[in-house]
Image 1 (cartoon, rainbow, N blue to C red):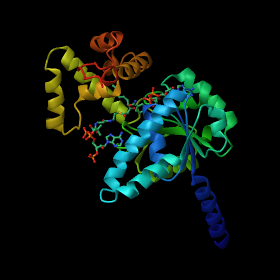
Image 2: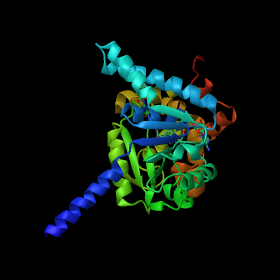
Image 3: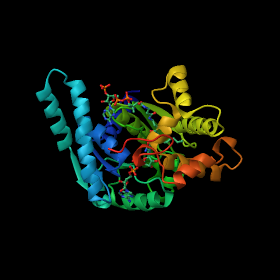
Length: 310
Ligand SMILES: CCCCCCCC(=O)CC(=O)SCCNC(=O)CCNC(=O)[C@H](O)C(C)(C)COP(=O)(O)OP(=O)(O)OC[C@H]1O[C@@H](n2cnc3c(N)ncnc32)[C@H](O)[C@@H]1OP(=O)(O)O
Ligand SMILES: NC(=O)C1=CN([C@@H]2O[C@H](COP(=O)(O)OP(=O)(O)OC[C@H]3O[C@@H](n4cnc5c(N)ncnc54)[C@H](O)[C@@H]3O)[C@@H](O)[C@H]2O)C=CC1
């Protein structure tokens, strides 16, 4: 009995040591990667943000600074000097780099948020697996690809999983923690603890298409597009309906433009290829047409709606 307790205590100490994630490397400095870097830095962690492009990194630092400013305004309403200190300290915790291998060497956790392409992710994870220390957890922020398939190229399958954030990362409170077939219990617990440490409410997901949110959200957005395409209601009315009738902060068509119609199409096409009999994943001619015309939503100034170019 005594031995059991001692062993138990030693065991839990070793787990909590393993869970102490202090150094985080985020690969991909785009929309999601910059948000993930921001929330980790806000939580006091040392962050290395990596991108192939130094221009992207410069833009990310600028947008992180601006978004930290929005957070500081809220947190330090009556103490602007404290707000400025908060922003400067958080920014000071973020280093940038262009070499993923080098940036992995001191990481406890690496979160990948690069382009949604299996081959590109495989190439990166092979490199990270050989460069990172043995204890480092590797995670993908993929929206729609299989965690097991992404992780098939790494040797440390027990230390591989999914950490799926939502856009905009600093505002959306959910984190989907995805357990792959070989993700160990220790890795899963570390990912859950880290998610809480960066201020998110975590849910546990299996490696099923779209996990929880996107499995529901993608068909919902697609059904809204089909409704609009059939002429059953105007785009504005569909969006008003879901905002006022169902309490969503954005209507489905606004959200499609916000996420990017190319992303919508990419996910739908991938799932249609994998599950050709599922009617919810069938191609949408309107979506294909808009994407072919380069009308990708807010980012290009036009999608389902038109936007003022800034
Ligand atoms: C078919 C395929 C589709 C799926 C594609 C896959 C993608 C994925 O894998 C998963 C996803 O991310 S799906 C997208 C999930 N996101 C949503 O659903 C966003 C819905 N929209 C919203 O919540 C609000 O409109 C929103 C928060 C965006 C904006 O809110 P408002 O309209 O009220 O506008 P604001 O007044 O500007 O913002 C509200 C408060 O939030 C602060 N804020 C906004 N952006 C920020 C940012 N980036 N960083 C820090 N703070 C930010 C803003 O300052 C404001 O604060 P308060 O003034 O204090 O309220
Ligand atoms: N946009 C969204 O609403 C969401 C996207 N995701 C997922 O997050 C990931 C990233 O998406 P976004 O941030 O929207 O894309 P993004 O296009 O804004 O950013 C991707 C960045 O990765 C960089 N990159 C590409 N290959 C690289 C490599 N080998 N090494 C280092 N950097 C590389 C690119 O230069 C680019 O800056 C994707 O897997 C996407 O499915 C997840 C949740 C929401």
